[in-house]
Amino acid sequence: SSELTQDPVVSVALGQTVRITCQGDILRSFYANWYQQKPKQAPVLVLYGKNNRPSGIPDRFSGSYSGNTASLTITGAQAEDEADYYCNSRVPGVYLLVFGGGTKLTVL
Amino acid sequence: EVQLLESGGGLVQPGGSLRLSCAASGFTFRASAMSWVRQAPGKGLEWVSGISVTGDGTYYAASVKGRFTISRDNDMDTLYLQMNGLGVDDTALYYCAKDGYNLGDFFDYWGQGALVTVSS
Image (cartoon, rainbow over all chains, first blue to last red; front, side, top):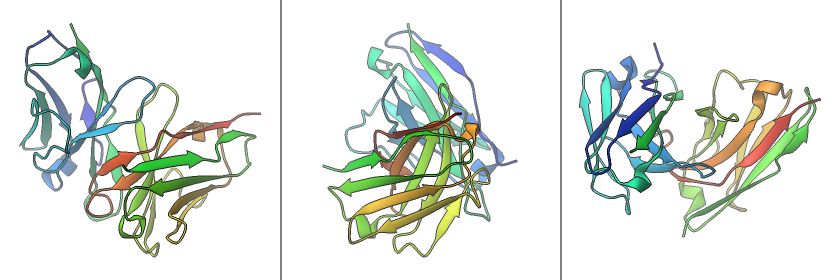
C-alpha cells in the first residue's frame, strides 16, 4: 500500500512532550517529511529527511523512525504549536508523492 | 526572501478549464524543481503534479493525469498548471511549492494558494 496513516487528533498539555506518528510501508524505503499548517495559512516544512530542521524551526521538533513508522516529537509543546501536522513521502519505483491524512494537535 | 505568488484561480463550471500561474522570486527558479499541491475545503493535502528543473520531466497524481498539464518558463520565473475537464472534486486551494534539493524530496517553500471552485 502507498498510503500514509496518521491519528486524526492528538492533544498535549502545555510544556509536555507529544509524539505524532505516520505509518506506511513506503517509509521502509523513503524518509518522511513533516509540515505544520495553522488555520488559514500555507503549510510550513518543520522536518525533512532523517531528522533535519529547516532554518528557523525550533529544536523542540525532532524526528525518528521505527520500522514502517515515522514520528514527529515536540519536546515541551508550546501554545503556538497547536496546528495540523502532515507527513509526506514518496512511493518507491514510481514518481508519486503522498501525504498522510493529517493530525490536528491541540495544546491544552 | 523566497516568494511564490499564485494567480488564476476562480469559479468555473464543470467541464471547464483554468490555468494557474505561480510567480517565483528570491531564489534561482531555473535550478529548482517545482510542484503543485492542493487542499479541498476542510480536507488534507494532496500532491497534484511536479516538474523537473528543465521541464522535461513532468509527473501527475492519478486523479489529474490526462486532464492537468504542468509547465514552467525559466526565463519568466513562472510555474503553470493548465487544468482541463474540471470536476467538482477539483475544488480546492492550489498551492505552488518549491522542491528542496531534488524533485520530490520535500517542499521547503509554499505560496499562499489560489482558490479553484468548480460549480454550476
